[in-house]
Image (cartoon, rainbow, N blue to C red):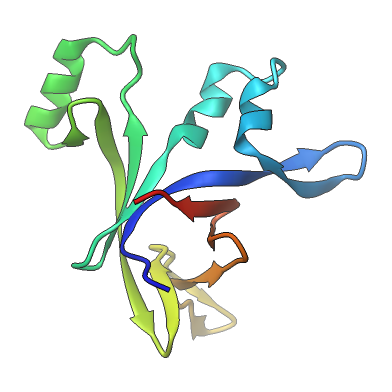
Length: 141
């Protein structure tokens, strides 16, 4: 599998109060759920760009109601990186292929029972794409 390219969220895990378990739901179904507010849905519009030089960039559309001046100030200060004129990079993490497995740097630090935590988390392949965090992603480019 070639990880390099643009990926979008196909399914996301949500808590099911009937079963008390996390279940995978299609993004379209979650976005259509009127009981959720727009802030809860915003991350579902994210895309993930895996670059050849080893970066995984999380891309998010700029909210339509975001004041242009605030965006320009955030870019000028280095707080925000723009991907294109309608999309910002909200996070950038290293990724690599090691022993035939894809991994990303979670940034987790510390130790458990005296052992250092490995910050490199595996990105698993699924029938329809890859599993990242609580999402299944499908390649779009």
